[in-house]
Image (cartoon, rainbow, N blue to C red; front, side, top):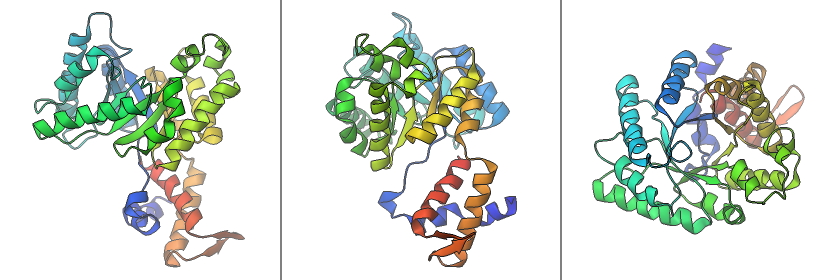
Length: 324
């Protein structure tokens, strides 16, 4: 089995099955948020234990205490430097969640983080946009800083948690600089001023309330339309980390999410295990793609089922997910 996997060149297969502009984005299946030094240190311990199969996001928004923005920005820069020194410049670095574009802390954070002295974050997460225009203006500001300093602009992730952003989610997902959209369930529910019950913040209510389901589906659909990564909201039941895995599995199966937030180190392994394809799914993908390659990517029949380039793309994505 492992030998068969090694004979499949996923990079070559991607060029066969996709045009360059249609190749979907590929991100780790778990995005872990750390807003304090000890939380970041714990995330690095998990990474050393299970490998680089999840992202770490340094949280400058919800992780910030009142009046401590400057100290937290400094910590983020030092953490990026520490990470690069520990793992090397080729390893994928943490991302950073900054403050909303309209917040006065946003400009300070961007100025400090996008500096030749600080290793560039893997991405910048922008929370609470009120509309697509907020993301566009934030991108323009970030581009201006990067161009003036001769830096490559990091990809943009956006947190969809307001009525306005949800109403324009297709436009936000269409932006070239945007790599991923996340659903911010807590602010979204609170934005309905108790019209959505508290039960919708947890499972199973979050998957059953019609307004929350609609938001999840619209975000996921927009991402898939434009080849971006839909990232599912947090699981608040941190004393039961296995619930995060159950949420991740349902979010993937029923709503098309291929990535999920973690807010406690114990949740990481459950999310990764639930979101990555099983061994049997990987075995089937390898078998189908191996036979397809032999047929020069023409249609084949395998176990009484027809396969063509559409199903080849499906199984390619299965293998790609396993290799994240």
